[in-house]
Picture 1 (spheres, helix red, strand yellow):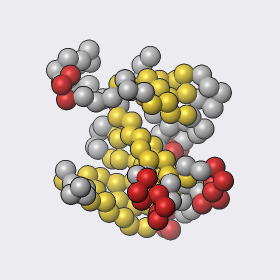
Picture 2: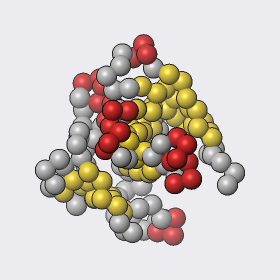
Picture 3: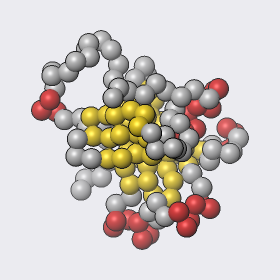
Picture 4: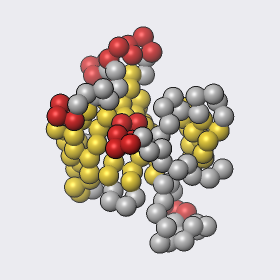
Length: 149
């Protein structure tokens, strides 16, 4: 299964990280499979592994498609809420888009947030936060720094 072409929805394609609405992420020890809203497999991704460096079938000049997934750590969920994250990195300039949605469907009223930004260093990322239904003029600034833990 190959990489999935970015979904373009006008200028606002980033509101779902250039991924189809309703897609599902299935993570395994080997990588990630993305399924559409009907359960059909759309694309497969291999987890990055530094030990496999140099053993790739793609030409080194071609950009890699980078999908990000994650969740709130259990120790922080009780204070900040449990969330799932998914996103994509635009290889041409390194733009990172993360979508955050509640892990518990009972609190879906909290809505989704879209975080768009750039890595400034290996430990610092800054950008803008936006609710998908909000106007661009209602975006908020955010920053993220790697913990020393």
